[in-house]
Length: 344
Image (tube, rainbow, N blue to C red; front, side):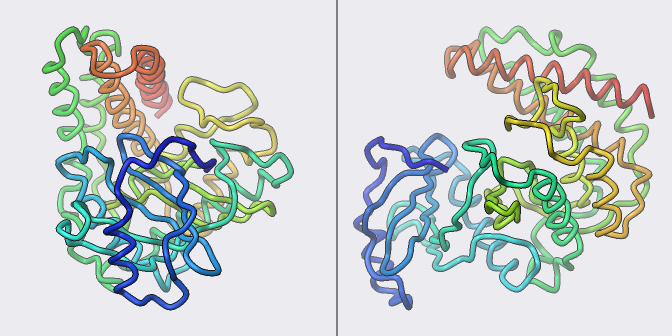
């Protein structure tokens, strides 16, 4: 991520004081802070603390109701991944007491590399980048949650069955935004939901899922190696194929981007969807007969999430241009769901 030049949105003094009191080996001070992200989701700030750099992750200046809980879950996940094959930022320190600095926060080691959706390194081998995403995803899905202290991290029973109702309720909730035109522009959303309900896989595999697994949540080295998967705030327990479906719906075949295609350029050189699927099957050892269901679910879920921004924009609560762009993507995602259903 490129540093932002905006003023810092939070007071770092209590955080610096807390870090000093922890006496963490090698972490001395909180110098040269620079924002990597400081929007409505989370504040991500890189700083120098001795001979190396670190990254602070903190809720937004105006926290959401669940901001502290989400950061606490991220802390649990990063702790659990410490001795696994999943590339991730190493957790250095975590404060789960909001009284210290007004919110839960944590510090992790800085990962040097590039985010392809921010600034693509033209020299990096893109074919390797795609395959490394599959290797990391297979490694994540192969972890026994109980063995790493995450046995209670989510309710696995009925997980897949609950998903349609969960996101249908989300869509219905947008009716609270005055001015929203309603779900009609998205096409027959209910038909997609019915297909998902009627074709829900009989069995689900229990694993840790990232919840928003796509190339924009990866940091890569110039050699194409995936150095870290970041942004774990949506992690939970579920079927790992949820993450596979999520990345595949944004993965292009060919060089022509669609509204829901990952925002990376150039697109040539990345592995094909078929290569990605084959790599995951090889590394995970899983049968992928039910993969179309997970792709449809990914389209359904992401499309309804994006429509929320459109609803807020129509109510005057978000940027209109952004809302319209995401609305177009939502329409495309629901249409992609219908295309997959027609092929299934």
